[in-house]
Image 1 (spheres, chains in turn brown, green):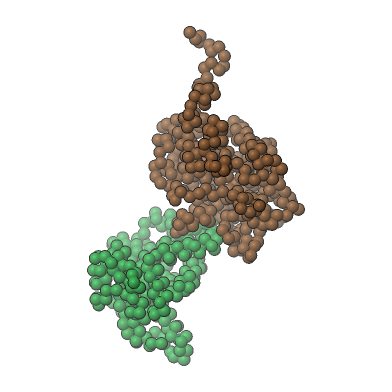
Image 2 (tube, chains in turn orange, cyan):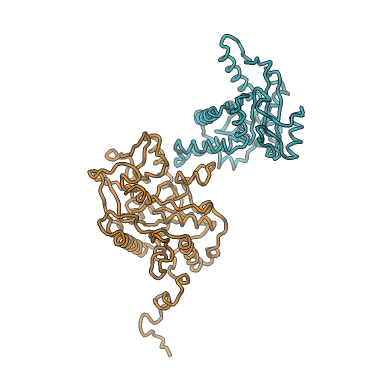
Length: 362
Length: 258
């Protein structure tokens, strides 16, 4: 017979608090309760998505279920879906390309909201090859490059306007944190999307420096980015995830496996702390669902890097299920695809710029 | 080169060719040609017209009936060599689908498009239209001269103001319109087709058509699409002027003004 006072703090905890009952006793696909959402994400909320390539799955799943994914920089309607994607429209909520790091997110937001001039005099680097121009901040955004510098900066300004719109009009900002490793301009400190010389430009060790971001600076950058967004939209809620996709390559001097472990661990820790610090920031554990040993690696392709469709589906089903479980009145039936969305058509491959490293780095 | 009096012209299209017919019936323009015929079908029947074996042919019963009525000559198909000049009017190539959204983007600070994207959009607008592909095939035959007048902007005072508010850039300027039409003209020229753009004097509120160029019963029928004889006359005059220039260029000492 149990007394009214628990014998210890663990005695009355739910099953999910115990490994044996929450994990070991279950088939991996039946592990549940991994996430208790802080806030509802409903089909009436405008959701924007940015970040590393895994973020693209979020937008596709939201659209497929009739959620209001905000595309702040839509492709012209005449373009086919394939054409639009070739120009990197409809992949994120603006044509930022992949945003792998906290610094890059902060940088885009600073440019967008005028805290920093993206064409600052001391750093107006562009990459030219055969009469075409690449934007070092998003080198693969325009297939074949831009026709002129004017066009490059006009397109960048349009994208920055779209970022402003996305932040100001969104109810939920989904950001997938991807990497800690980055490349920066030594003079201006501006961070590149990709290492110069991989998908464009010429690597110059006098100008281009490797930087592996550490916990404190990532936390600082993320807090600055979050504050900037909230200044421009006080009702904005933020949902963080960490990409489960391992590094393609590391420049840290470490083995790519341990470098991946470092990178993801730091990002995961920052995301967790940000969620703990702010009631309007939440962390959704897609990273754990894919990577944790409890799932036995079943969601990775044979290269142990790419996430298979089944894994993506399981992540998103888990997302909607958790939402419905926590907010049954506000959210629709779990995991039910209500319509075939734009992003669901054609079984398109997720566009991952980091793959350029594989193509060009060796 | 044949004189105008010896040349023949075919006005091809969907219900938009009605404005050309009105222009002629109302004697708004004199035709310096030996022969002018209409050929086409309206509404859904137009979709039954296909290019097959180098000839435009009505392949459905509806389309055959429409063609018979509109042609009035018993001509049951069209080949490039049948006429010296073809004027494609409307024919499902709508300014509403290209010029209007491009102007709409122009007012949006996030709407800028690179030239490569603009080119892709234009290409898709043109080549995604079956009639345009037919016009291109006719022009490529080298046996006829081809003009194309896309369906014009929607009619002012008829189009729902809610639609206007959410899709019409009412601040669009003549220069912005001109730049877009020029791009269309250049692209069509590469296919051997001459664009007849919507005459600037017919445009109002950015990219709508002035009500005085709308079909006579536009307001009564709430018809935002069709135009009247005055509009048709401007299209014909634009084409005749271009043909006169062609003739003048070929025979610089002969006055061929119309």
